[in-house]
Image 1: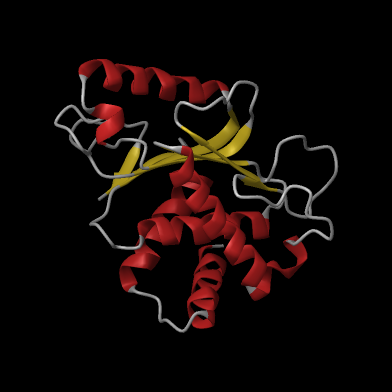
Image 2: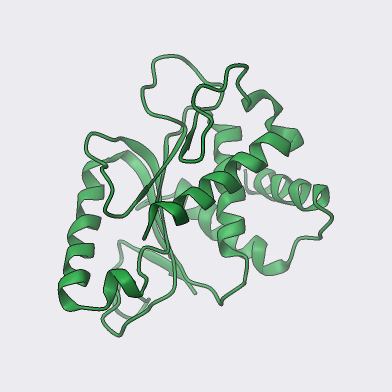
Length: 209
């Protein structure tokens, strides 16, 4: 299966005229490992401009390629940031040669904040939907939650804001489906960061930095 994800990544980079950096394959390997293996929790931290969000978007599109019924929730500090990730995923689906069958004939849900690919009937939630961390997520269900840059100065510069952020994140366990995966992507902005490292995380979580 990992080789198929690599093929998807390489095909996209070839399409846009780039080769695949070694660390992008390492990031992708980590994401797939979190998605496929228990406890399905992971933290990705990488140097700035490393392309981590780029690879995460490719990973999300590839998940939909293999499992179109997957429901993905993108959370960011602000809805505009989350919409950028949805736009990235939408662009990949619209242009990747392996995603042709995912594009619906009627694009009723093909917008800046959500999209729904061709899939089986009976699924209520969009394939991909985004929200700011303080947006309304009541009643949502997701098989993959991607928390992309939820810790930024405006969400963590006081003790009260950090506690509010942690409380909000605890709610995600009620949204995630059984055996669903949750991946955090970001950079610490405070000593009291919400992100854990290998030294202070328990055995139920994994991270790469």
